[in-house]
Image (cartoon, rainbow, N blue to C red):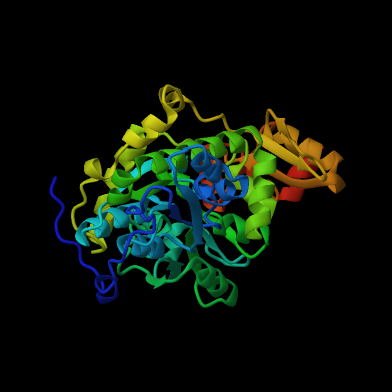
Length: 447
């Protein structure tokens, strides 16, 4: 389908179309700078950003090209995907990573400004949408989405978290344009607003909801996985850069695959590396990026994720952020297929590890996995002084959450965790004899 003109702000239209950051016209024997835009604290992009940078795999791959050039990587860190897109359409960033909704804006604005870009790989994803969460203050009286009617909600317009908010409100029968007062804020600003009481709720992407919950500054109101729609982060590259430097892009994608394998093989060490680089608590990083974390990491461009991207277009169009977007022409898997060779088909078919309860002991380099949440609670009751973090999957969505922040339900002999009070209450109402518990009560029952 043809893409219609995209409405752009005056500022975007005035962006200079300067020389590309990759020095694509450099002669043989010259130094070529490859500019990579990433989001250090959007931790589901770490295999194309924070973790990849700390491991040095991209530089190693570039050094192995032996094409007569010397390569330098300029890593540029941003809070969201929008400034990365602005720099890419100005020809100043060659490769960038961002979430699914920003990727679509990247596609639309690149096309509009004559700097087309392409989605070339995936970083982290959740097939149900669990990467985005709506949270409220710890002492908030709000218990369900319907309670948001007439309230102030902070989000970043055009982000995946905004998409979750819009869809969730629509399902709850609330007009996302008229039923709430939406505050368009950067994640850090929204987090501060929630703490100050100037907004009633915050809808954000990783790692903000988990971070605020871990710090005791928020509680989950809505688990994005309730939408049961895939959400993901991916890597986008400028079309001119990809054509002029295909070997460099393939080197990046090989390095990304190496970083993915490292994260999947050494999840605790990877979480600690990301924590060291970002200042985020390692326990929060592991919630999302751990062995059974909310995100799955795989660079393959799975058809299910591409299909989800096509469904996202309507949300952005309704918000008048874009016109039509030709997703099929935006997605370009040729480079990642060449980079990964015969392993690509295997990666495409690799299933997500099943959800499980985990405990991270103090001083431990590995986590302990438990067959049931009740067994995890029994362990915690017996070792409460030696625990760094404990994680449990939501009984209905599978979204991992901190055990001490979850809402617990007793159903016969079973102790079931839920991310939100609303889903816990829904379960109780459908199961005679089930009842909600505090975390302390759940510990006592398990012991």
